[in-house]
Length: 337
Figure 1 (cartoon, one colour):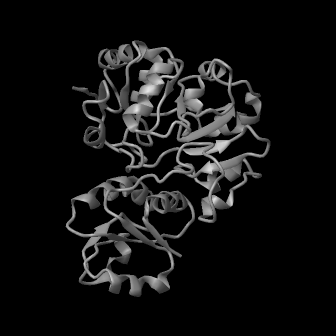
Figure 2: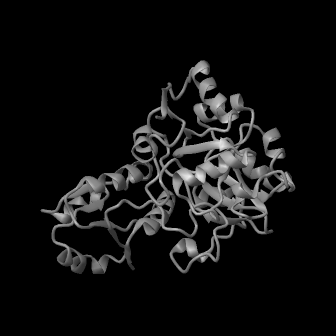
């Protein structure tokens, strides 16, 4: 049985979060909300607890975890690197949905880092996450709280669907505000490099880091040689039902003919182009953050439909929709360019 603790997302009750923090201190696992998605957390310095995360999620051991901190003093416990090179990013985006990769201290277990000599760290802004880290007294290693490869959880019910009975505690604080995992930037290898797009967009990061490098694999061209950050190499975010992502509009008609009963996943403004078909509304193109917020809920909902496949309409790859398309490319069984 998993203990489920309900709290207010803005003003969480200290006594309730203390119960979850005691579980972290004892080497247990806690699913908790952040501003991005729900995370599955454990004491980052407890190797057994960290290995339990991998076991629960059925996660490949070379897929590194993100360590969550609530202060810069906790960052100092983790990194053997010059924090000054990150100063402008930290001042702009922490607390918030940006993960930074540094050279790690020897005390950080390689189980956390997927065997790498680097560690991925972020400081979440969600009041529940911050209080949990504070009361636990340790940085918390936490990937998304779902079975590996499944759509990430944006509410406690998604966590329950995937992990109930395996995780010790699930903190239910409702929906996560942003709905996409954090932006990941590698600062350990000289030139700042984007490894995963997220709620902090490329355009926003480049205002602070003008020389940010965006690798071609993020543009759907090729693949990274090894997972330097979560979500880079393995199939992620996928519902059980196959989805076909149509990026090339000129090929849409032939795809529709091939799958006459497939539901269409698209923004509200595009629904009129698919008259007579089942439409799954992603949100509004005019309000692109609604699409990001809805993405994983929509992908999970596809498994409830009576259909062999679903067709997803490609989106303009800019701003937050670049991050959405990154997730859709990884979730798709087939991408039609």
